[in-house]
Length: 602
Image (cartoon, rainbow, N blue to C red; front, side, top):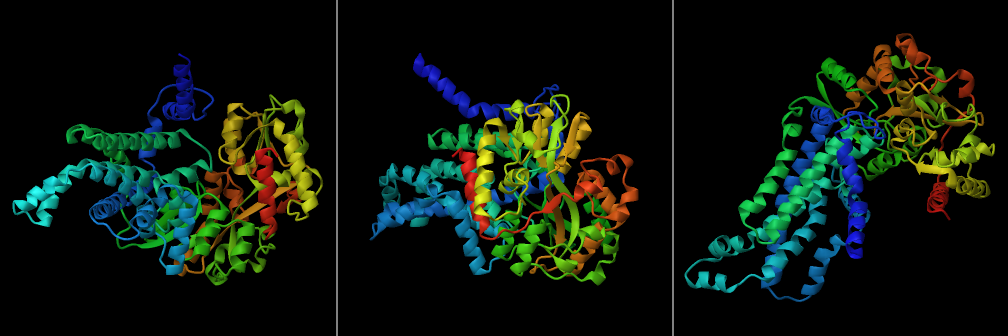
């Protein structure tokens, strides 16, 4: 009885998050904290989302190609190892299986370095090669186990009766080991279509897969649409793995094929059939941008005006962007780095100088956001969005108006505080509370800030940089550190939420449009940058994304509600308390180490 209870608790612990995700995908309410009734609307929205459809199609292309290559190679390798005896056989067999135990991050980094040294452009080919590299081992183990129990006297009998090696293989050997080959193929397919870590390193232009799309969407807030996509992917993967299990157990092909076909049907249903077509002979502009940072209608207007196709790929951090460009051959024409990232990219000669004569709409930008320290004269970048880091709180639950970072250290709100899961921002709050710059490199000041964050940790309910605004909306926390754009959307849903920039000061970030040094469509890239600076377009982007626009000519075109929104456009006197993040060079390692100590509680 005790063993049964422990087993049930263990399985509940393992699968409760998955059950919750599936249930919330049918929740009419966007907030996870409240049940608004049953609905399939989120599945319909996911099935009509061009970005999701395109990324799913990419995942299927990669998974099918990987499955064919890895299954054939694994079968051939398993047969060779079983039939032939040669020197160092054990060592070579061990080398094939090493990827099954090697950390994914190691495989991802090594593959990226290999492709960079070979000058191979990142894209579908590099993803497929990488997926074959780590799935081949799994397929090899499955097929080899089946071959070990195969009665080879059947092959000998066939050849004694006059069958050649090819005929024997297709008439005798392959039918006997086919269940294992099918099991290996389905396992490879499931591993490939689910992979994020390796793919994120080696993906390039037009090769955003579904896991990359989901993760980038999560960075700007978890919605039931993401839950719906994740549920479909989960169900399809589970069915494929179940089919692989049935094949491996020797069940009939009809029995094992049913869940496999059902899983493939889930992936190849309206999610793919309703997807957008390819660019064909159109010229393509490759845009690498944060998730939910430009509206689809804005992209459509540029495509219609210039008769081109804009291929949008997503990243989730400046560090991911830097890694991709540093590896080389990424193939992007436009990127959107934050201020300190521009500084790093310029120093590493990874950006092209801009032709200001091709950017007449730069005159629409507020001079206060030009000629900043990270790019004097805006030789390499132009501002796209700007924003702030601050505190949002529910005034119905917080005792008094908040105006200081000290509120996040107030014992009255124990268990109701949320901090960003970001070393620079968390340490920035602690440093500002001490009256210091959040670009400090003094080890003693940073250690004191670490101690402050450790002292605060007992009050913190969560460190969250993804859907912090949803956590605040749900009531799980009452005060949250976060970025203004996401809080602005939350305030539209709940008028009791208030956003403030603490009196000690905070972060100002400026995200910029820039052209990588290896961009191929320089003229079209300049046209796109200038397009986003047109007053009507800039107003449209600001209105839909709710981040602050540096385009002063767009100001009269914005709705009054946006112009007066304190989270979108804080008062000018508040801006004097803001500070840009700077590249800290080697001190970044110290920040990372101290942040690890905070998160681990040491």
